[in-house]
Amino acid sequence: MSSDIYKDIILDYYRNPRNFGELPNPDVRAKDSNPLCGDIIEMQLKINDGKVEDIRFQGKGCAISQAAASMLTEVAKGKSLDEIKAVGKPDVLELLGIDPGPTRIKCALLGLKVLKLGVYLYLGQAVTEEVKQLV
Amino acid sequence: MEKLATINIPRIREDFPVLKRQVNGKPLIYFDNAATSQKPEVVIETTDRYYREYNANIHRGIHKLAEEATLAHEEAREKIAKFINARHTEEIIFTRNATEAINLVAYAWGRANVGKGEKIVLTIMEHHSNIVPWQLLAQERGARVEYVKIDEEGMLRQDEVLELIDEKTKIVCMTQASNVLGTVNPVRDIGRVAHRFGAMFLVDAAQSVPHMRVDVRDIDCDFFAFSGHKMMGPTGIGVLYGKIEHLQNMPPFLGGGEMIREVHTTGASWKDIPYKYEAGTPNIVGAIGLGAAVDYLRGIGMESVHDHERAITSYAMKRMSEVKDLVMYGPGDIARRVGVVSFNLGDIHAHDLASILDEEGIAIRSGHHCAQPLMEFLKVPATSRASFYIYNTKEEVDVFINALEKARKLFAR
Image (tube, rainbow over all chains, first blue to last red; front, side, top):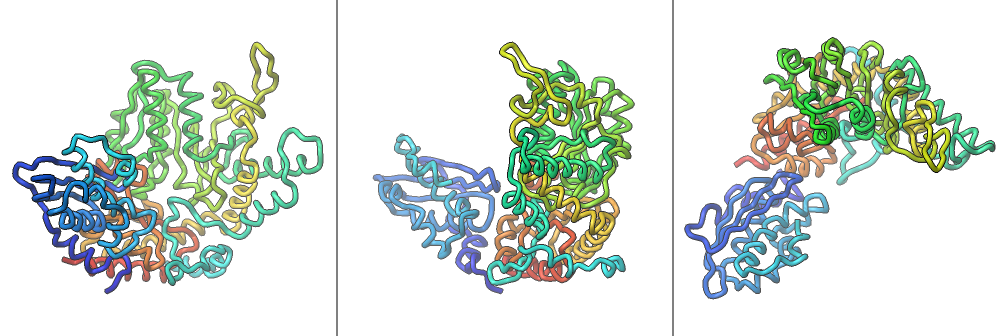
């Protein structure tokens, strides 16, 4: 069985999501959904000294949305908030190892949007246009 | 199944240029016919010929091209009237689609006839196009919208029909065939109940007219709405059938050119029906193309279309029932449904499934199918949907089943 879109790595993260669950006493929680397909992602971040000390996510939805969100939690851990602001669409596609195409790209980018929402929420800053346009 | 042999499906497939296409290196298998159908060569040629040979505006110009275009446009109206067995050709109003046809009724008839505290009865299986126009009307007029529920099999609950339709009910609006469950509703019976209480009866026929013989006089509906693009015609053309006495008495929908008799600075008077409801330059090529689609469907025969789809649907449902973890929605009895099969496969998200099938060249629909109240009722966020037409084959169903098995194995934990 092989699939061009559903690389083993995506299915692996979908079946065994890393950093899945609740973080006790997070400094910030962010949540968003894609109304078109019902994908939901929530992330909780523990922030210390301007860096992501710990992160968890929860969600429901398609394999691409859930795998991408899980991969991003691994990327985010230990990064500074400025570094997370700089993560973009190409980084997510590189993590997934595929270009999901125009109809599925929103699934792939939902996790990134939620991660960035968390950072902006924590900083009390207005969300940039770039973040709003992700999904 | 013996009916399959009497219709020459390979010959019919030859009429559809797009079916020769490859998708992701595989032959296209188009199972998204409830969203829109493919177009036969004759419809493509007919629309092409209008632009090449007699493109002109209709009902106005005193020249040869305008005369030809007007004639072709009005011939299309006659063909459609015959196709659904309307008593009068002028009972056929051209709209953009079924959605606009329903909006026309909600706006023109609804605003003049629905008042505070009165009721609009719908069913829980309606497409958003047969819900939202009524919600807007109800909000504006202080009326109420109520929904007939369904049973576990996806059939309308007769007890609720009789309970909800009462003296306060001004209109009952329902689909003849569900775009999610495939359920064919007993529209004639429910129309009779509506009429007994003096209510109007509107049928959303978007999923029925393309696939079965329909007869608006037999159904005895007051309004009947459908789209051209689901029945092999172009996009952007739809039809509202209305009983002549209602259309004559209702106020207009959109105002503008083509629909007026006289305009003065102080006011205007309207043309007779159907033109009263067709403001502005219409979709001339769309109407002519839809006329060609109707000719094509009549050439095959709606009984043949229906029989073939029933055979394919029956085969698909049997094969799908053998796929582990696959859940189908809607009636199990093939006699009570059209060729629309919604399903979920284990806990695979409908969009993941659609992507995997797309890799195999198979087009299905996934999502809420513009029927969110029904999805809520079924307690599923989304379903996948395979929907068939005259050009689909058992061999295509076999490829589809193999792709479902592939998806199931890929996602097996």
